[in-house]
Image 1 (tube, rainbow, N blue to C red):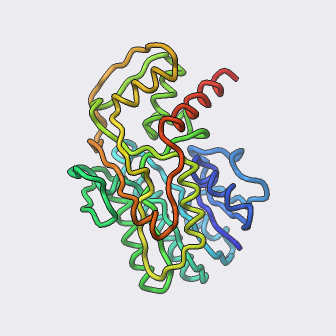
Image 2 (tube, rainbow, N blue to C red):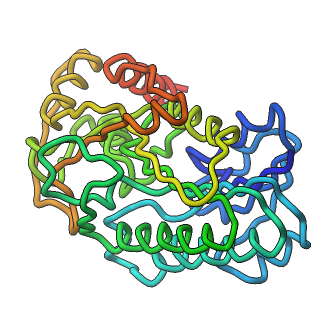
Length: 308
């Protein structure tokens, strides 16, 4: 099996590629903006460049893939306000170009890493895949546009799937990126300065899912065979208030640290958590790592990484 995993130098993409490399030949496109070549699994065919570049796409040399998993792209709502054109290019334009490539080169399946950000605010209960979309950032709007392109290409015969990832965390996350990944930002601040600056209210809430459970969802998609377009929430189904997360971090860290609250970032969401019934039922997937255990492991990894 030949699989293109874009973004395999990054946090999620590298772990997905490594998992799939047990039974498939992996090719990747990555510009290494936030990732590292050192993350690539061995024997991976690596193409350095932007997925939205026709020059980069040409380097695929008309290779036929069984599956394309598009995980690359900038993944910060905050950054999307700073440079909305780049966000559009790296997320939406890249998706359209890869979909076009997939159709022309007889690819069977296209899997897209979407986001919980598409739901926005205004949801008091767990959101399902049928819940209203209320995007609050350029990033979320671009992801919705990409999902709609997947729907269109599904009408041409390509099997397409969107995985709406909730707040992914875990060992290997980029602690140098201070504008993406709430938990990694807090951990990085604690390691570097011994204090944490929180952008927004401590009463906000999130659905945190461990990267290992996310990888398992991508693996399940390999054997999922359904014509047309599909969409799945990939979360835990549980919400955690930021204040509770910070209290938990103090317990893991073993001592108090100062916390400063400042204004929220543009497009920040009050909170959303997932209804995962569809993924559990149709993909035979479910999250196994409890947040308290996964978070403690993540913090220990970060502290150990800093020591060494």
